[in-house]
Image 1: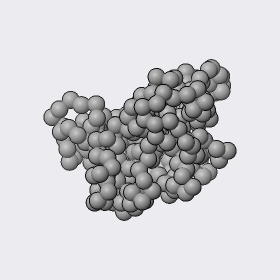
Image 2: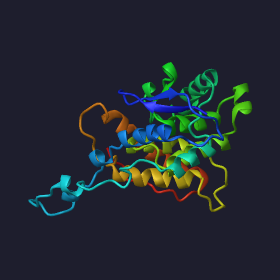
Image 3: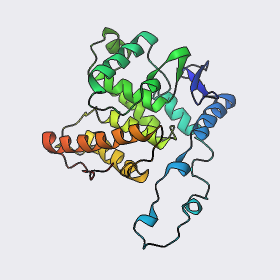
Image 4: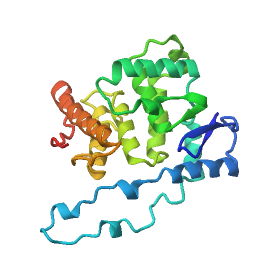
Length: 259
């Protein structure tokens, strides 16, 4: 299995690591812990917004509400990293297959879900910006790809399990990237709407909408480099929820129109 270390540009860089059945040594564990901690930006992007519903003139120090140690301050545990190894969550497809999946994603998925930046999908020099995002993109692409090498490499179920494990151990600490990934996870729907499931489109859409509200995607974003992508993510969630209700009869949360 391959492990990666985040470099000065915030990118996870390919590093040699033990095989799938090897116990992760302390050096490798510390590298992954540093990746987890470096990406922690929740304190700077969480939307608290109490001044929005309190009376005018009430002074609110939003920074004080964030002045606490995050629960993930120490990174992921050895058990959590072992879990990622079991699910092969840090493995990426061969370069030729990766490129084929990305092309399929951009052709068939991106027009419906324009929630990623092209630069986030670049795999130059064996680097990846986010394991969760890439595994989620590969999952969505696997639903529309006809690549002959895909069936030999992994099924959609296996790709989904890789991304799901990364999500539940909170390997990705950037909340905006997490929401982007969730918009990809909902492309996989192993159970029909008549069954109670923790893996359906409805389930992931509800998680995505809840997190989107928490980080303020429903508010008009300030001018800046993330303005466009934040709007696209929010409206993609709005449209997906409406389509789920109309086409599948799902009760997915229907976020109110925002920015």
